Amino acid sequence: MCPDDIPEARRRRKLAELRDTLALAVQEPEADLRVWWQGVLHGRLIELEAAGMLSAEDCAAFADQIRVTFERCRPPANDDI
Image (cartoon, rainbow, N blue to C red; front, side):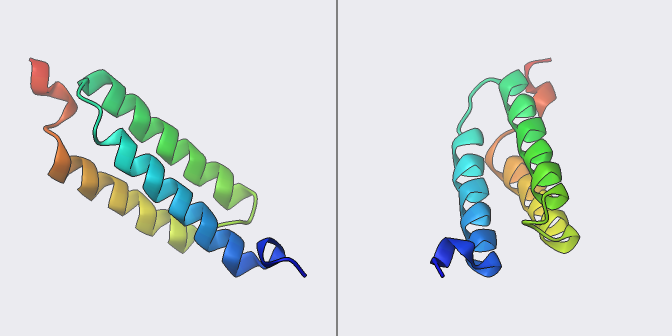
């Protein structure tokens, strides 16, 4: 059996991909695009949970990580008001 066929390995790989995307997203200087990236990441969590690749607990934990990371790394989306 290929390691990619093991659910835990696939779960770890998907979480790593999400972390890589999050790292790129928080570097976005435009507030509107940061909001867009947040939506992309949350949408991806929904897809991965629906596909059974991530648990609801995994998704909730990563959603919290998204929130904390964006709050820490950039001002809120209304920073240009």
